[in-house]
Image (cartoon, rainbow over all chains, first blue to last red; front, top):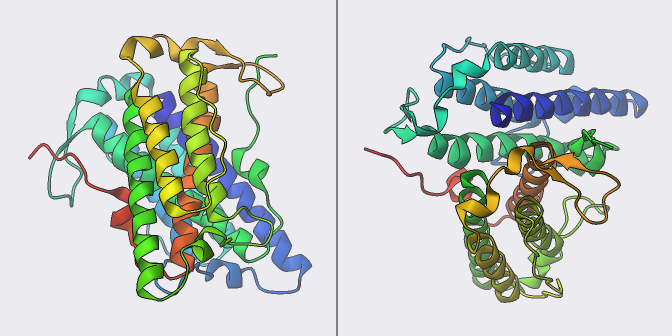
Length: 165
Length: 165
């Protein structure tokens, strides 16, 4: 459950803060924040808006698949940073609505995500698709912002760490 | 242990294959592969060589910290794709040298990685630093190659999935 709820929600909060910095960077430099939302690393890669939507979608879907609980449907029609931040917030709400018992036995449960050609063990699905795919979109979002000159650094991505002492 | 050994080694094998494609792309287009190794997404981000080295370093360090087993020291002097592939291979060898029992109790063990200001619970260290940091370098490596026009796609990054049926 830590692997899902804590990991996803921490990174989603981070993503929301990166978008705040993107918004401020655009305002400080006199351009529309939507320029960043439409930015891509390559013409045949998805733009920032889609990267954020897909990070949220992956966190939501992994949570739903591993718990067997229905996921809310989000329209993915966001066109501004504040709208994307609402999507992130809704995703966090869904992920954190789970209880530890909802994940009970997730590693060895057979899961068959809808729209997929086959079934997996929960741990295979999570560690070989859910997690790598989540970070793919998370880091690509970060990389687009860095590439476009937004003043963020590695520590903005890692965030605060829970030191014991 | 799946979270560490399976996850890291799968993605490291993927990274090695991405480098193969980078090498072939450079050869097919008549430029030195080292051009890609020196490429960055932003002038103040690290180049591809460092991204690969840091992905390896993170996988190695996380394994060492969580098991309490000494990590081999790698010089990180790689200057070519074949040399980086050897580094990846050595990292995989180290990670896969662990037994399940080596990770016993890792989640709630107190760990204090050398050079760090404090101590963590193993699960905090792993899910809030090890994993996000590993994927940071993994996805940035992918993003550099994509940005420079190497013909790779999302499925090269995700790799083969262990379907049950």
